[in-house]
Image 1 (cartoon, rainbow, N blue to C red):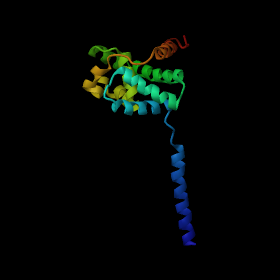
Image 2: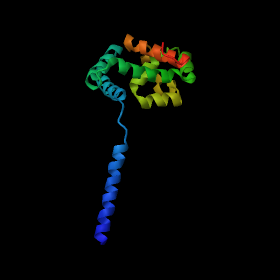
Image 3: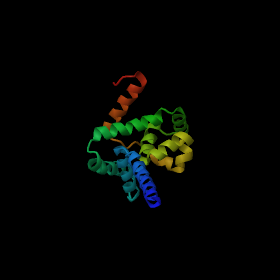
Image 4: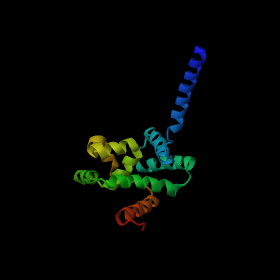
Length: 158
């Protein structure tokens, strides 16, 4: 009997591990694409905005194959930063366009985005901030950002 009870306990403990793994949420496609693109970008010798966009495009085709959806989700995250008055004020005081910097922060990942919101752009990015003065997203992304911004301001999509 004791051996059966021990076996039952170990089985129930094993099931708990499986249940925990099943509850783990899948990483959204946009963040998976950005994570892979960032790793590829870091390995490049030329670290230009064009290279950054090519890295995204490379994984976008393989992972999602829906550029408008990707850029819409990407710009939602940019708007998340732009909704922070502290973030916008700090960028302006440092002489940077908040939208341009926000694109680069989103490219760096959700952890960096959350750190910037919590601790500020200067303390998180430091001297790297000067690399993020120009935008890199395509014009399709700007259209999505304009729609999202209009929705947030007026409560309706433009």
